[in-house]
Length: 238
Ligand code: PXP
Image (cartoon, rainbow, N blue to C red; front, top):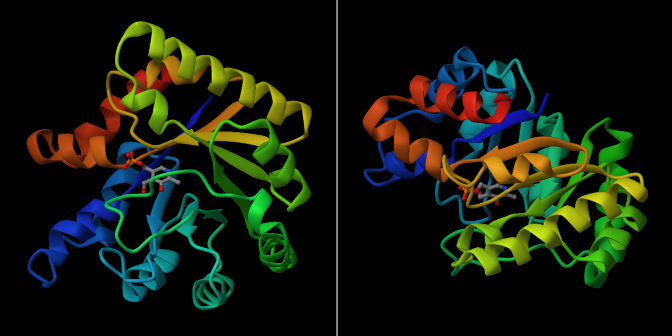
């Protein structure tokens, strides 16, 4: 069974629009878990634009499924992650000016620093995932840098227009998942997935977890979060 990780950052984005108390991402996590989500994902960004330290620490105490922390490889955030101890960290690139995570992590170009961070996480019993483009060299680098998982970036697939371009992106994802499996990596996928395009990603070889945020929170505005999570779960399990 493929697992669903719900990214609840955008619940905090709405809260931060007024810098108040609601809606509380801690409540959102509880609703997602009650609806059947397997994983709760948050991204503690360096600028704390949505999820903040209070959220992460409370979520650590309340999430009973699996807490997956998306994070940049910086001394501050690595230190917080080691203290809070989520079950899994997903290392992502981070640029202050971006609206969301734009490209995959350059594991090859940051091999030394990522390997050092991964070793600390390994010693703390925290699973390490690298968010990468479906690229063979990045897969090999992820293996070298101590990854348990890679999360394959599905953004190019999600943004592709026209069936030929969609097919091309899917083929790259399928090939990368197989290559990752050969290298002994566990496979997750995410970014830009929604109620229409998630289905075709389910065929990725060995896929364990899908990480989906914006489309679920967007649908929740109209249907409620419980229903939005259940509808995505129905697609994943069909
Ligand atoms: N996976 C990773 C590594 C991400 O950075 C994000 C966005 O925070 C997601 C998945 C979820 O992407 P989306 O919000 O487009 O579903």
